[in-house]
Length: 151
Image 1: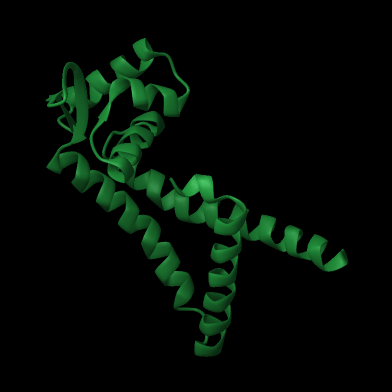
Image 2 (image 1 turned 90 degrees about the horizontal axis):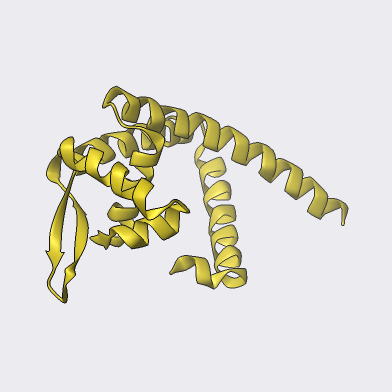
């Protein structure tokens, strides 16, 4: 049990450092582009899932349809997303990312990745192997206990 507690404490500390530092670069790059956190969240959802109806974005964000529609409208006005007719249901409008939106999101993701690359550059080859092996174990175990989150 003591090992489990030590793992939990170390992992919590690592998570705080990782999220704080890597996401700081991500958010700073997004802010430079004039994008808010909810807007970034919307772009990330579209990036992961492809074109989505506003109602799906609203459900995932836990916001009202009206609030999500306003958010989407601002992104459309900024030229970061488009609204197109769903070929399967003309009543539904699909939200998709534009090249401009993709470029901003990619730049933010690269800024976050740079922190990870900088950190990797401080590790010895043996440390890189050890950490990589440990991460693969964590990935496998996380997927096994929570396969629904992969969908």
